[in-house]
Amino acid sequence: MSIFEHMKKNNSRELLFFEEESLNLKAIIAVDSIILGPANAAAKLYEYKNEDDAISDALDIAYYNSLRAALLRRSMGGASIVLCGDPKKVKNEMYFRALGVFLNRWNGKIYMSISKGISYQDLNFVRKESSYILGMEESHGGLGKIYVNRAKGVIKGLKAIAKHKLNTDVLQGLKIVVQGIGDLGSELVKQLIAEEAHIIITDKIYDRIKVIQDNVKNIQIEKPEAIYDTECDIFCSCATEKLITTEQVKRLNSKILTGGTNQPLENIGDVKILKDKNILYVPGYIINGGDIIQMSNEIEKYGNEKVESELNDIYTNTIELLKESELSDTLLCKLAVKKAEEYVSNVSAIKLLN
Image (cartoon, rainbow, N blue to C red; front, side, top):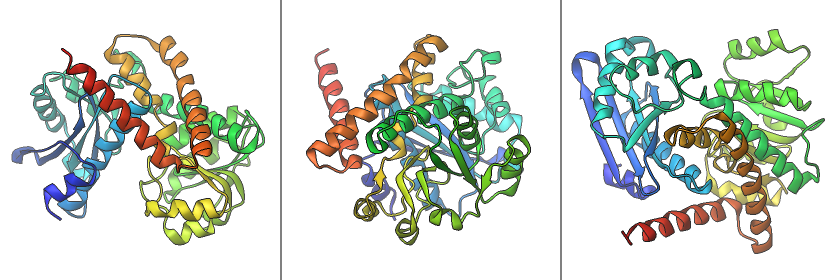
């Protein structure tokens, strides 16, 4: 697929390539939109099979960052920084400091945040050259690790979804599957334990499971492939994007499918199967914007007290979207995208008045 065909998929605006051969640094920067404000560029380091996959991923990440910010009416755009390579081989201080130098060329139009394959130590290296960093630990001047507030936002969203679908505004006693126990999934499990939910976990990496096993007595574990047959109230995917196949959708034994993953369905057309099965599908980008709320407040120099208060926007926003979707008989995923695009369009029109 050509680069322009890739970009046409999400109507993306800019795609840049940056290489520093001496450091094995190969970066793809996708800028979806800066209409609402500076863009959150989630940085991901991964060894892709080919450049096509890397470009597609960069554009998707940027698009969903824009979508999440617009749904929450944040003054923030969407971008991504995809780094191509084996994290075990390419990582070092100079690698990330070079990335910081490149980041400065944008003069604050994009800010880097953490994602898969990037550690907080890596961010500290970038910070030696650039101040355009979001989601730093409190000890380094930020508002804390972003996956904590992302998980808090998911909890707010789950309560709204449960209120709409299950007629309860608490998660206590609900059977909730958490698929994928990375940073977000493991933090979500901690918060669900505090909510006294009945949790079932799965992950392809056993070491992640073991960490939770060692800290939580009698937690229920299922094999990755068997998880789709597990009876539950909420299936919460925090795993890889577009992981769940059509055949697995047909096997789902849940009342609700949602999670921290922006788009868990391999084929978006499978929402029709979910509807026929009476499974409420709520795309992750509707409820996983707690990190967006944190980072927008970091840019505006506010503290955690304001972040905590504004996380409630996720509950309110989710309830409103669910009600409108039901009343208008519109698929929730289509309604959410329409609302986000309308907001960006309206803001853009207002800015033209200057």
